[in-house]
Amino acid sequence: MSSRRRSRQRALQILFLWDARRQPVDDALNAYYDTLFSEEHPLRDPFVSELVHGTVQHLNEVDDRISRHAEHWRMERMPAVDRNILRLAVFEMAHGGTPAAVAIDEALELARKFSNEESVQFVNGVLDAVHREMAPSS
Image (tube, rainbow, N blue to C red):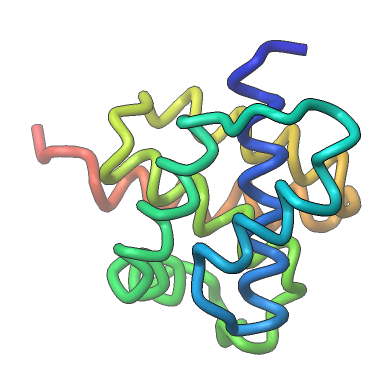
């Protein structure tokens, strides 16, 4: 598994923790590194921090983009895993410098690993629509 994919998995876990507890983002990062992650590797990953902080910093914009394309789903009613996979991918496409195809593919891999096949289809549909909206008109 690539180190970026592993970093995205960690960022998703931290965003899930942050979303569930509604605590300051640095507290969620510290909780992850101090408890869940400490046995794996003691060093902090700057890419994880960039993804988590960036997603939270741009949360209103990211959630607005998702909400416009998640037909019949309010953000608060989405499964928390799916909501945070979408947030992470939309942040990467809009502000992270990640090509849309890569961000979408990585999001689908996260959905396959942490959610279910229905979620994979949902995430793909929403992200495809967000990408089309963000693409410059020809």
